[in-house]
Image 1: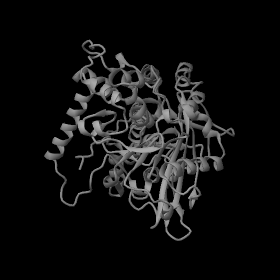
Image 2: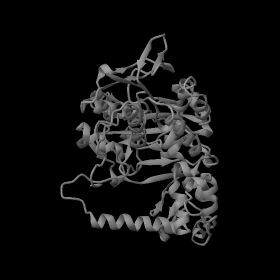
Image 3: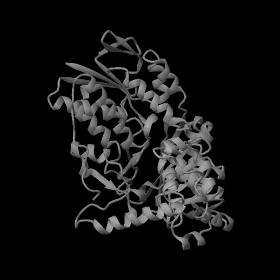
Image 4: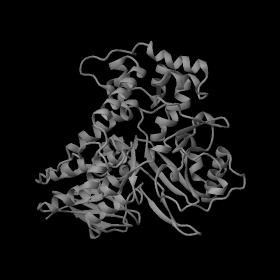
Length: 501
């Protein structure tokens, strides 16, 4: 029996372990052991069920609260696990995004795709931008490409920062008011150093193909509308949304994956200290001195943690991992009685641009974004603190973080100054967000190349090719497939999920 040890119980590690467990279920002579340093699985997915003093409960996601429908991994795995019917879409009737500008909340104009306007009237009438800013954005239609790529070249060969690209194409206001909070906020990144080729290569490709982002997004919008016309929703089918979750929160997914892997295969509260060769196989040393023998190892932890683990495997990989910065963040869910929330609740989130110099990055109105998250008469919100510019704020006490979040939300939404939450919690994600800086893809390619030369060794996680839940699952699956092949096990699975509806 071949044994694979997976280090890390987040969705990347679970993706690898579930893949190996499926191979065993298919009759292959292999087993998996997952080592997780915390007392729970799921990594940055964490759902709690909080009772309300008046009855009922809150479904609270302290980390990731959604996955995107355009990437198939979550739905594919959910179908395999038999939990696909538990997927629910965001409440699109409340689908509005608000942007902080001074003391105002301004709705993101209709027709804005990522950060490019595709409708003239909403752009002309929005107070989000000044008139010089609006005219500068429209000049994207006239500004030529920075350069024309040679045949065979890709976005990686012409990488630049988010700041450089957006300011060059559409001006400073487009960056500061929408691109930075909307695009950079997904990665909690500093636009001055954020690699576009590693995060949104389609922007660079769009410029090459169309010579204009506005024209590129217009074509994209027309294509989506044509696809909807060709594939109307079937009667009785679930409504489609870009963002989705599970009825009982995102923890449903890692819990189901762990159950399929087997509780006896997952070692909780056991931190790995080192990975090293042992003859033809491997040995994983745990803190406390315990040793686990393995025929293969998959390391699926944060870049900063992996750096220490792989020093004895390949010093160059450890050096490259150490060059991937990681920032910390904090999620602060708060619930209020509806009587102190007189504002219009038909929105999903508030984005806070860095230029506003406020402590919050964003706010999600969970009770309007998802169905059945709160008892009747309650309002559930989540505040986000952190990002490269505000790392010092994440070190505050829980009490201070709750008060900062409460006071900022009260100020933004015009609630009574003394409005107190029914409950509040703090979720800390130390070093949890890798930063894809310039040169990231070169580092990743070198890491992958060196891993390819090490039999029985794989790496996975958000530090490499995407921070979203589907990306992390696929990262784990690729690492599992690599080590399985090297153990002489070929296990192929259908990764299709059918149509978008």
